[in-house]
Amino acid sequence: MGRETLLTLLIVLFGGLVMQPLALLPWRLRPDATPRLAERRAWAQLWAPVVPMLLVGAWLCGWALREPDPVRTRFDHGMIIGASLPFAVLALRAVLRAAWALVREPAHLPVCTVGLWRPRVVVDPLFARQLDEGPLRAALEHECAHARHRDPLRIWLGQLAADLQWPWPRAHRRFQAWLEWLEHARDDEARGHGASATDLAAAVVATARRLPPMRAVTRGARLLPGEAALLGDPRLLASRIERLLQPLPEGCGLSGPSGWSDAAALIVLGLVLCAALALGAAYGNDFLHPFLLWTRSA
Ligand SMILES: [Zn+2]
Image (cartoon, rainbow, N blue to C red; front, side, top):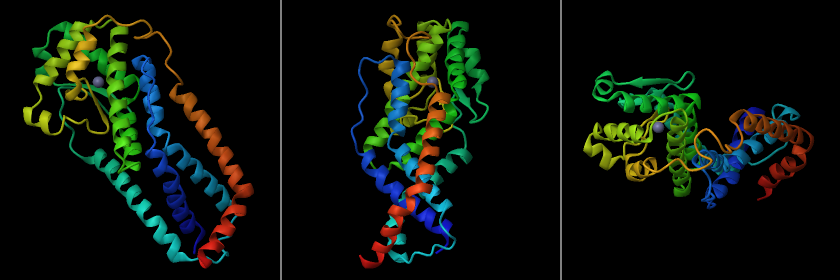
């Protein structure tokens, strides 16, 4: 078998074996966190089962760097292909859903932020004319916060992470929890930039009123991956409005801890992946050679 083909099969097999049990674990958020910190923690928890899979992939790539092509070790091709097939189906489903999210028609929400690489705020002109100046400014502050944090891209990636952990309900709940904290965090950021909470609540309610009732009931106006909107999940409307009508707690808004930045997290992840690659190149064959031989005797 060719080296790259075997490498792909092994990444799918070992990656799936590592990620699926981790997706079952009950990751819990500390209840005392501010929305900004809770959003960062929920994001980290959504990706926690995926990161070990990336490490396994890097380790296997390191092994492949020193492996001849084609692989000389004799092994049971059928066993490797058969064992990796279920995980390959899950990965293919996740990739197809991510691709579909990029090409499907937008949701045409009255106020939203669209664009993965260059997020921009889109406002329905008719909706803007119906809103007073204060609520419109508050809505724009909320959307600008989404754009500053590249939330359309993060929502798209978050959906991909959740889909990779399918079919476990806990992964979907982690994604929904992150989306909820995301809206609270952007509300707080908009308030930190001067938006009035009552204006923001009025804009959110006005957006909810524009939603067709059947859609609200049957689909919960689920955000399309690749879009961030003022409304968020309408099923959480009551709790969100209730929170907006309370004073901004200490440590929320633009102050207080926010956890690691995306850049710092990506740098650390890159360094760890490089270390896994080096370890795979140095010691990968010590494990994979006996494993491939074992498939013939099993
Ligand atoms: Zn929003």
